[in-house]
Amino acid sequence: MSDRNSSTLTAQFVRERSILRNVYLWMTGGLALTGIVSRLVSTNTGLTRALYSNPVLLFVLIGAELLMVIVLSSQIMKLSAAAATALFIGYAALNGVTLSFIFLLYTETSITTVFFITAATFGGMSLYALTTKRDLSTIGHYAIMGLWGVLIATLVNLFIRSEALYYLISYVGVAVFLGLTAYDTQIIKRWNAEMSDSVSEPMYIKISIIGALKLYLDFINLFLFFLRIFGRRR
Image (tube, rainbow, N blue to C red; front, top):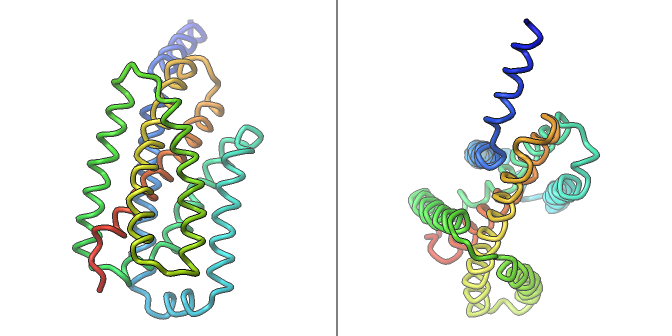
């Protein structure tokens, strides 16, 4: 009788799982952690001076972030659920350290304003992707090509320092990450329909984390491009 009840409870728990809901919970938690760490670092004068006066340290931190993203994106199925969770949390915290510069460059009012602009825009695109019957694969492919264009143009502008190109990159960047937000949301919606009730608990956690990483990156980059356009510098 006990075993039967246990099996019934397990089956009910599996039916109630939602990859989509879990993705948004993980993404929100990651964004909150990044924001808290970023604000704390920015208020520590000694830490910010050490961080931004030492290019080598900054490049090491950025390199560590890229490595974490690569490992999570390409090797997550080989990791344990605990390791994947730790990597995502570590990445969100480390990203908060490297993004602390925004509190030094922009006013807090403009940062708050841009955050809400980003949240509303991101939410609108996610809602569109969740409700449309249109296949957004084509948009995703164009957005990925546009991302490569943004990266190349950004590298070029490091040398020519064109203000016009700076703003062009910013507007194109917004368009690119809006497209990626819709594309990634639809992918996660598909995962939710196909796998929420069928995968093991560790796999459920790992799928949720990789989905959260996709949307987290979309949100952060959208926020940074909006900040370049609307942010008021100190």
